[in-house]
Length: 77
Image (cartoon, rainbow, N blue to C red; front, side):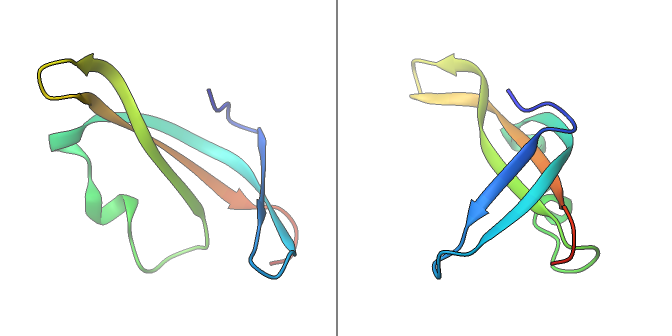
């Protein structure tokens, strides 16, 4: 589970790294996920991680929710 303030380090293809700090976490029913906000192409730079959450529906083989974690850059990017 991600906690606000937790650090995330991303390693790029060239081996360099970028450090981010978690700024928020939310959970949405998959049908209600605000796609335009989660995947917005403009605004301040941020890292957005999307994964599955909520209850597992055995009939569909899917989780009911998406968990969205946002993080902001630490230092100069």
